[in-house]
Each structure stands twice: as C-alpha cells, then as structure tokens.
Image (tube, rainbow, N blue to C red):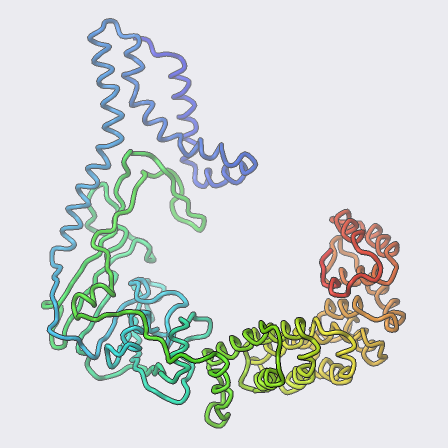
Length: 596
C-alpha cells in the first residue's frame, strides 16, 4: 500500500504549524501581526493541532485507496470511519460520565427542608467569591453591603433586621482580613443619612424610599442572635491564588468551583442544617473533541489545551431558596408615596442646616433630577429662578452634574435665567474644599454659553474669582475674561499664559481665553501669543497651542499661523494645516476649544 504524496505533505504542513502552536505566546503575537489579514494565519495555526489529529485518524481511509484487495479496503474504510468518530465523541462522553459521578458525590449530603414560619431576624454570610457581594452594587456599609435581596426583605417589612457578614477570602494575598459584620434595619426619620458608599449604584425605588424617610440604618457588628443563618461559601475555586488543582478531581474533568449554600436555624449546627445545596462547576472535554489554546498575558501556561465546555450543576439561587425555605416573597420593593420631584426637592431644601449639615447623595440626586426637569421646561417663572438659586447657594449641594442643568437653562432661555449669573458667581466666590471643587468648577463652565454682554456687569467679580483661585476650579471663568476689553482682565489672562507663571494654572485655558478675546483685547494679547508659540520646539502640538493658532486665524492672521506650523516641522503638520484651513477670520468663539 502506497501513501499518497498530498497526504504526506498535509501531515508535514500541519505538523509544522502544530509545532508553532506549542510555542508560548506564539499564537498571541501571530494574531497581532496578522490583524491586516483579519487574523487568518492565527486561526489556521490555532486549528492545526486538531486538523493534524483527525488527519492521522483517517489514515486507514487514505490507505484504503491503494489496498491490495477489496476485503482489506473495506476493513480499512470501516476503521477509518470509526477512529475519527471515536476521537470526536468518546473522550467527551467519558468525561461527562466522570463529571456526573463527581457531582453526585459532592451533593451527597445536600438536604432540602422547610421552616415552620418566617424568621424575623436573618444573617447572610459569604465572601467575595460567593456571589453575595457584587462590585459597586448594594447599599449600606462598604465593608459588608446590603445586596438586593437584603434590601427587599427590609424595605418590604418581611424581616426586622438583616445582618450581613463578609468572611475573609481564602487567597493568600488576603489572609490578614477578618470577618466583618453589619446589621441593617429600617427606621423612619425626617431625613436619612447616606445609604451607599461613594460611586455605588442605588436603585431609584430605594432612593425614593430613603428620601421619604425610610432610612437604612447600618450598625457594625451585633450580638443579638439571628433566627436563621444563611451561609454562602466557596469551598474551591480554580481562580484562587495561588492556583491549585482540586485534590480529588476525576480523570478527564477539571473542577472550576464548588460552592455551598446552607441554612441553619437558631440552635442548630452544621450536622443538622435546614437546607444545604452544593453548586458544582466543572469543565468536561468537548464533543467533538478538539485542541484549543490558553493564553495568559500575565504569566501562567500559554499553549495548546484540550477543548472543554463548562457544566454548572445545581446552581444556587439565593432568592429562590429563601422563598422555598421560609416563604419570603422577596418581591419588588414597594414604591414610596407618589409626589412630584419638585415637591420632594423643595422639602429637602427646607431641611435646616442645623439638623442636616450635609445632603446625602440620594438627596442631591433628587435635587439634580428637579433641576433637569426645570431645564426641560419650554418656559419658566420667577419661582423657578428662586428654586434654582436656592439649590445653587445651598452649601450642602456638591454634586457637579447640577451645573449641567444650569448650563442648559442659560443656553435655552438666557433672558429668563439671566438672574442666575450672579448667583453662580457668588457660589464660586466662597471658600472651597475637596468636596466642592468639582461642583464649583462645573458652575464656572455652566457660563460657557452666556453672552459677553450678559457677563460684562460681573467682570470684576470674575476677575476676583480667578485671582483668588488660580487653579482648575476657575478655568471656566478664566476662558471668558479677555472678551471684556478690560485691561485688568486681559492682564490676568496674560499672566496665566506666561509659562513661568503660577504652577497651579494650566496655560491651555488662558490660551482659550486669548482665542475668545475681543478686538479691544487682542492688541495686548497678540505679541504674547506669538512669543509663546515661538518658545515651543516639540514636533507635536501641545494642548495649549491649538487655541493660540486658532486665535491668529480668528483675528485675520491665518498666513502667519500656517507659517508657524510649517517652520516647526510637526510630525502631523499636514493634518494641522488642513484643519487650520477650515477656519476663517471671525469664526464663532465657541470653536476655540477645537483640537488641531
């Protein structure tokens, strides 16, 4: 029997490609360099080991073509069909059988009981890997947040309190952690403290309940015994550090994780739980069998691996298990008493500062929502101006997004909301700290669309604000100063543009002010602008240069701006010149922030 040459060549080619696939990180770099070809070479190398296996498996079929007689050919064909089918199916089938046996062994001690009544005091215990805590989700204390189930139980009155206990992770990197417990309850008050860590997402229905006075009170620890204890534990995770295989894993199976859910009533121990459920996640060999790859950019094995699929047996459903065990509803949180957002906001503003020195994040969210609703109105009234002014001037307001709504008001209806200009400037004039810096900065930018004539009566106040705070919090005000034709304002812009000036001031925003300048201010600014541009030597434009080049164009000196760019030999000079040519003298000052 003779082996055909094309078959031998195919074996040699895919054997060589398979050898490349075994080189650590070879596939990663091959995909990178073959991006122009949509990664096609990488996919070929990725598939090469699998193709090689099945090419070898069909060798009897290839030999059957040159068999000496018909019975031998038929036998070779039969073998040539059985071998690839067996390779495709049998390893995966064996892996699934072993996994089924392993899952049954892990769940052998599971129990499913039902309590006689609903516990009024419950403790939820888990670690970071258990699923009890979600990243940037939940309310309450950051050390052990109250998750959605906890919140539903409390706000719907199904329990008196919930204690949440975060257990330390098994990771060696976190071995110094200790268990942390927080007990949560609902208490009605006139106004509520902050109910979530900074940056955490709070459901609107929860926020509205908090605003209505249904406060989530969090107390560290707690010695009172719970009626029921619910524990979510991660007995094993392949993602833990340092990584280690499961000590008793069956052949052909990789154990991904083993989690356990257990309920104990008060006075019982692990030997007599009310309910126990084991969730087992395993990786079994895929059907059909194939060779895939693993890539670990930050270390670990990189290379060919047997293809697998993930099976999760008896997945844990915390809410469903609590319903089944105790009869809890754990339904959607009942909404607060219906009222307009404006009415709620006015009640918040009416709270005296002596009683509430700061507004909670949830209260400020409502105030911002009320501002946005006011900004969307087709028309306004003096009551609207008074309402907005009250929000702006209240020292307890610190959320920067409020300024966006004010900017929208000043843009859509400048005549009506013109009285807000001195209010905004007065708020910026007061002393600031880290909690109000972003808010004050955004208030300054809220004046971006206000006309120069409307700002002119307040130029002295604006100069005073920039002089008193030579940092990023006043950049929005700084960009408007050169529009007044005032010597003091223009001089201040020049000082902020000076490279040797205040280390706290970014010259980019003084450059924007120079671009927005009036014709009266430009003669004083022009030599400073040219000197500043001449001092630059990099082969790329800095952020503060684009506004200055645009300033030259705006005041009829486009040829000089183009000459400066050509002489600099910028690496992106052609693009800068093309963009400069799109501007004409006296273009709208709002475009002074465009990038070249």
